Length: 637
Image 1 (cartoon, rainbow, N blue to C red):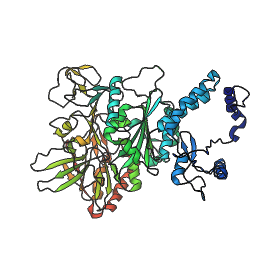
Image 2 (cartoon, rainbow, N blue to C red):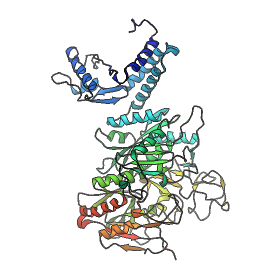
Image 3 (cartoon, rainbow, N blue to C red):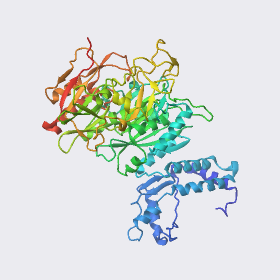
Image 4 (cartoon, rainbow, N blue to C red):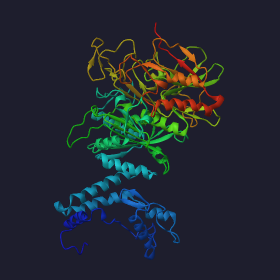
């Protein structure tokens, strides 16, 4: 219509936009065709002429609601098998080219389109300008991304539209990216760079004092039937909760960057590993996920068209208005939700930036969602450390052990034996995924790549290996800062250094009546740096488990060690675990609560069904099932 429109073209656009109002739901579908795509030699790829009827056929199929299509940044395109190409000479390579969206080429053309629209000034409809902005955003989000899963890309685009970030960053997982994000957080006040001589490439973060631990009271399991969640979980109706999440996440990332974090729980290439995509507006989450999981472009490239991945949505819940100053630790403590839709499955977390609530690959995926997947698929996702024990004669044993949080799992996983000739090696300190191996024995992998440990009480005396592990390349959250730029917490040394700044940023003295480090302060550190890491910690087939231990903090009643009579008795022992509460969870510290299998906060379905799954798992193992023990290190006189 360029030579033929008899009035201002901007008003013409506006007339088209408003004409939709006359048609309602009976408006025609709109398509954009191009018969003239050329190859590198300048030859037309599509035969054209009568063969264009094949495109018209697909258009009619779309009108009838039966034609196959895939969403792309520029609109719906036919899937690879949607066009009828029987009998014509078009190679698969040429079909790929014909249906390929050149994001970089489109982005180069955007300024030209914007300049063209600029000539219309204020007469240009706002909707037209907005659609150009949205197109640029979708193209930017997809440029240079090795995405092989169309459902993944479609979901990310949908979340971008919902959350409305100012920019989108697809995480590569490189050291350069990590350094850039750490520098960004240093400038923003989230991170304090520690002394390079004492603690190379390490940082201190101080959270909002209201955002310091897992929030079990705000953690939900959403199932159609409340009985599938069980009495030990907070149940919510999935439809109502999804509506709530849709409302909360609408525009929640305004003024912030949306980070797309592809991650793998377990060694890349292991048949037992699982993939996920976390969408977050927190750079703190991104750098912690780089340590705690296999993360970045390699993972994204491994997610093929038919690969399952868990959709994980996270926001700190604090959008920024134009010109609004950000805070060092954005969060929304009065509006926190950690929600698991176990039947989809997906995870949505809002309002908290703290590790357990925000690093969605950890407790949310590796335990709550994975426990549900394990029940369906015939394996176990457990809150367990994995250690390797070697006798003086060289015989090797692998043991999995379940303890509630802050009961010494990490210290046990990195134990230095006091009896001569014995060695302990660490496979993992927190989570174990256990399957039946090809040899009929129970095998376990550690799905994590790092340690997210409780700092207070960790010292050269209690855990020399952990102290060596986080000597560099680590993140510390809510610990104290020494005058020379290092970290400190209660229990690290007998005497506290002078001149400490506590975890809230205030000067601290031993008689001030406050803890220098929060009782649930944490370190995030790569497992690969552990001096006692087991040689097989990343074995894709896992390590063979010969014994399982349960335990908890009990000052009385429970003996030092008890062996179960048989498997069923061992499951009973796991089902009756009780432990004193610690600062790692909400509740009255010191109160004894029942915590079966140390999974009370982490089992994604009815605990009675969980017991039943354990009982029946014995059938897969036969006579090769591990022995089960109950220990108590915490007996008091």
